[in-house]
Length: 575
Ligand code: DGT
Ligand code: CA
Ligand code: CA
Image (cartoon, rainbow, N blue to C red; front, top):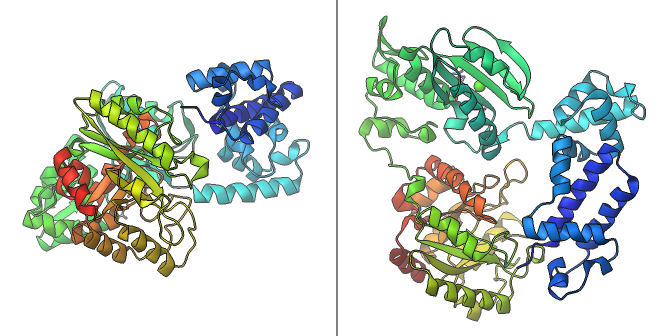
């Protein structure tokens, strides 16, 4: 199965951008840009030319050198030329290129003369009036850049959980390596696994002679130090993320963790409860008069108030305090409860790995089953399958299953829900599958009534099993489409269908609130990776996090079932 032209085009485009920023030979840059145009207009994948012993060099704009690079990308997924450029230039420069009005020449001037690498630094330079000192940058350009970046920065001020995790985990590891440091825990919204995080709140316990404060403010990624004291410091990383660090004494660590984990609403409710019991609670402990009666651990703090331990994901003041008093808290699902993944792609459509490679990765996670669910052919940009190709894939899966002992591949499809609620492929082929995931990928702007009807109608389809990413939100980019989710959840119950919680950190759809509604209505949720490559299975942790915020337990989730039980549930939907 081919590596798609778009991947190769994207690599060439990045090379061209970086070469141009570097001030490389314009003919070389032009050659890459021409190849990008050729690849994007090509139709069949360039691999098919190689398979048929035709030379890509016959294509306009692709010479011997670029043909060699194409072969390299087909074989390795990347190319040395790009890797080399990544070592020479900061990656963030291509971000600057995305700002309207900034081409490679201007980005080069910014980088070489003002050492500007990121949109944040550019914003600062524009605000300081430094841009207009550069040739070709007038007052007007400066003003324009200032406004554009400000609106872009505002929109992306909250960081998605995967991005913030990628910055947080190395920072925690770095701090833990400081001599004398005991605990390093990130509290706040990050600990509650909220889908976006405003800033990081790190709590540390350490011996008095530890240099952890100094190490924190000299972390290699620090852009500036906003505040600095003996027990507290605030830094901003180059990516724009703000991080607070607080040094806490061990006898208050639990109380501080409880306080700084929040949410604020939860804390207010906890404080109210304490007051009713004649107690006082703050970030130092729980107090009876002047005496500290709890504070070392979080469990102690909750216990002192007559509560069982409340998982961070539940601390939103949505009834968790009453439940903790009554000992009725849900036993939240964990990643280890998942027995399989029901939504993933391979090279048959727009995925990057083979079915075999996905099976190997699933086996490492001790999964009992995975469902291969390519796009249907309506979705042209993703190389969606038509009936013939779907049947070919099904045969390949049958053959593979015959050789597998420990894991089963289910045959599925992520079929497009058309504007009127029909599905993109005919019944006879859908009836041969183990499951059918219906997805909306077009006409996002229908009225609420029409959009809801469209989805209800799709669910009425005899072979419909799971509704993919039900609300269509893309975090920080696109709101959920106009929908009556109550009716959709009610209808899913009547039809015996399931709702997906898509674990991709840009989606996390269903969100926590709708997970809770689905649970209340008795509709099982399927926590799926929507993996397009092997590493995407890692996203399941984020899906499980959102499910935990939505109070889901093992029993509320479809893919915690054993294979026979899963098959029974899937068959019920096929009417
Ligand atoms: P974020 O950073 O906007 O994603 O959200 P959080 O929840 O991390 O909020 P943040 O960083 O402002 O504060 C961290 C925690 O500290 C917050 O969840 C609860 C606690 N906290 C902050 N301010 C207050 C307050 O005024 N009252 C109470 N009770 N708690 C507060
Ligand atoms: Ca925070
Ligand atoms: Ca904070």
